[in-house]
Length: 259
Image 1 (tube, rainbow, N blue to C red):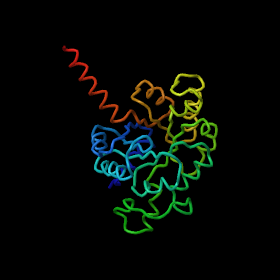
Image 2 (cartoon, rainbow, N blue to C red):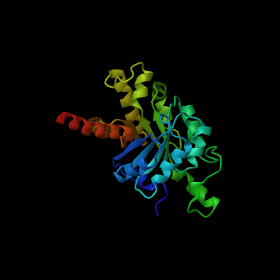
Image 3 (cartoon, rainbow, N blue to C red):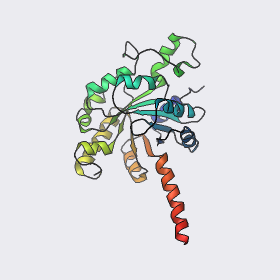
Image 4 (cartoon, rainbow, N blue to C red):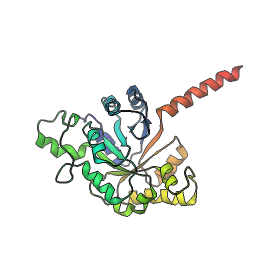
């Protein structure tokens, strides 16, 4: 039987090098995650850095994915073990950690997501123990319940990437090209040679290390095809607000044109 967070399905697709597509949710209503899952997305990126959602809202989105094929990933706003701890106990399929700058910092966060002796995660599971009969059984399965993903979006992290990709317990990395370009003083200049070099470094070093490499970008299918050819596996594309805006605007523009 599959777990309540669909991590097995998501992990299997990644390990078999099958492309995975997801989308971001930023509004509080968990119906958005359910709709996105039913639409065929492999995962839902629950955005806790740039949204106004609370922890309770995040929990509702995670629960909305249960009974669908989609895996809920929670992107946290900054690398703070105390911030991350409550999300771990909600049992998402993955945690995406933002604004990392060094291997030392990344290793600390990975250890914060693992129980002793591998790390220092505090013990207080909630949804994590559904269907599990004992603490001993849970601890045998805990590491497999969740993917730990480092969001690489600073040039400082890129410069320390050789060490980051070798951290034990790290499952994947994701590219954040906007903030990465910003830390180079070239925010939004995605085709700048220096920005492109940094992007290629993130992809190539992650792939070479055997990590599950992904990204969060808009609905740029040409870019998806390009990065997929370089070994990227998973793509968080746009967000529900953007899809709603684009669809609504298209209809409104067509109706206005009738006049």
